Image (cartoon, rainbow, N blue to C red; front, side, top):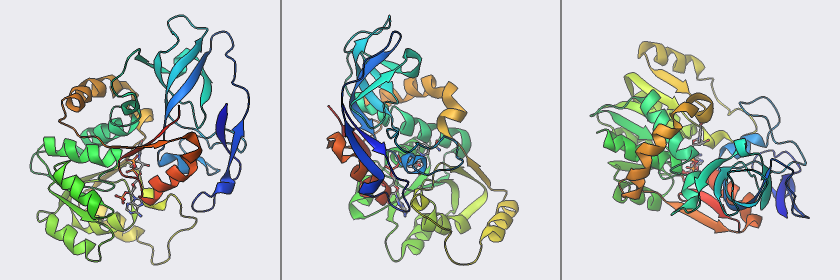
Length: 335
Ligand code: NDP
């Protein structure tokens, strides 16, 4: 057995001291449990929030507990009818190579899978987030202009490609020239702007001559600040995430912009709506899967992963995701 426990709460970016690597005996399943071996571990921005103490939509990881995380695992031992050794399951196995689960805590993925790790990305939580946030809150119409940040990540890349299918003019925002080129040439977005460029603001204005009807918010910070004044009357803003703040320890300096933002929301009747994917939309998952699976299989929706070998790499790989050093969906190949 090997795993990563949280041993210290980070202030800012998580450091080595925040985690400890534990090894020991492989756990044994009790009657009614499954022993799972982790094949792939998903690394996602929300994990940073779980490392903090305090109120959120999900409880924090306690010190001395294994870090949480979605996994694609295989049944190693089964005491449960209907589960065979070797079955693939989607579970919340966390940052460890073996985990125990009750059958109601896992989703069966079958005996053979072409791309097991896709259940952590395009066909799983991030893809579903993109689909529901865009369709239910963004409500795209042909001719709308949509802007999405983190445009080459698993959520943003899916939002951008789906919005093109709905006939939108799509402008991505991403970090660096390579990601921006990929967003246009492979994902098919109309433009992609580097948020690190000095003239980022001017480029955004130029790419959105009709203003912005939908802003799919993934990042916050300077991207939000550049987009907000350009939102059109009755614009929709699905507030999915704000990754640029996740390592912040205090509010930024400068004047409080709340009065400006609230006044604009009123004047322009802008809809700004947050959502938590499974809490709000669990009932839609089957429908999403049957829509998205053929698009992915037929190559109509492109999907990029960054697979890193070895569970030991998980802490550094999570930091890469938060810093924008990952390119595509970050997964760890565990065994
Ligand atoms: P990504 O893999 O896209 O990783 C985050 C990306 O954010 C980085 O790669 C980086 O991309 C970008 N980023 C980081 N810092 C900054 C910054 N300061 N300014 C601009 N961009 C920055 O993540 P996901 O696709 O998994 O998730 C995207 C968002 O969706 C996150 O905010 C996440 O928390 C949220 N989310 C919300 C859910 C919900 O239920 N509400 C469910 C799932 C995800 P780049 O290099 O291009 O800048």
